[in-house]
Image (cartoon, rainbow over all chains, first blue to last red):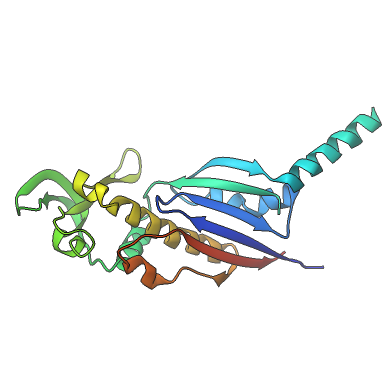
Length: 68
Length: 141
């Protein structure tokens, strides 16, 4: 089933951009924002996971340790 | 919500640049062969550019500007932004970059199937005081 995702894009006074997605997480979220890296002249300076993503990462690590 | 990206940009796209300058109310001149810029006293500067905004147009934001120019750098495939210290102090470089980023992002969003829900009011670009701008875009996946 299709779901709606949202990007909140803030352009500060110096032209620096911060993009924050809503309604998506993990790899799906990173894939969704990939097009921003491909805009000519744009350079991604930082990708920062928020709490949701850190929790998801921990969950993956936990699953890996259980299988060992 | 999962992650956020911080992005900086260089001016590489002529169409986006011209559209951004239009947002700021400028009517730049475009030259195939670079032309000399003019200083605030009307003096010819040694710097040259392919796209020039005349100082008279910039004065509405500043007061005593020099021409601002964009010289195509074929080695780095980007425009060199030529802006005097006076105009930098008046944040003209930031104004132009902010407008350029807005135009480039709008185009990329449309190309990638996003619909813009909340957009920047274009008239905000003409205000004397600059502010942070926000775009909210949606997509069904």
